[in-house]
Amino acid sequence: LEQERRDTVELTTLVIALLRITLGNVNIPATTALQALDSVGREKALSRGANVVMPIVTPSHFRKQYQLYKGKPCLEDTAPQCANCLDRRVTWAGKSVALFDWGDPPSYAPRFPPPPLPHNATLT
Figure 1: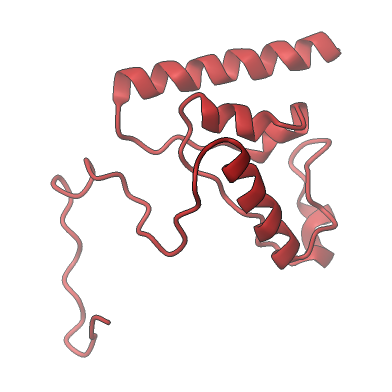
Figure 2: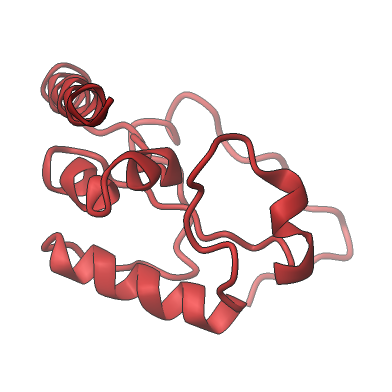
């Protein structure tokens, strides 16, 4: 079973690398499922072409009820603990966290312009 887990992470990160090479500037997630298979699975994905991580924002007391797979990480972490851990993991993979940046890849914007703002909205 352990070999299957390693093989799954390797194959997944190989596909991530191929996606990065062939599709260029698209969003590719480094998922918690990879971390469930390998303690540094998300870092491997980031170092091989993934460019998106998603923090776990479900309130701590509900997380155990929303496990989609065994071994889901960070079930006991508070939101600040999760944010700090994620920042360390991203940094370890040689990347940086871009908080509050719009997440669409640059190639997305020209094809789909943003909808108009409501008449009473202001930009800050």
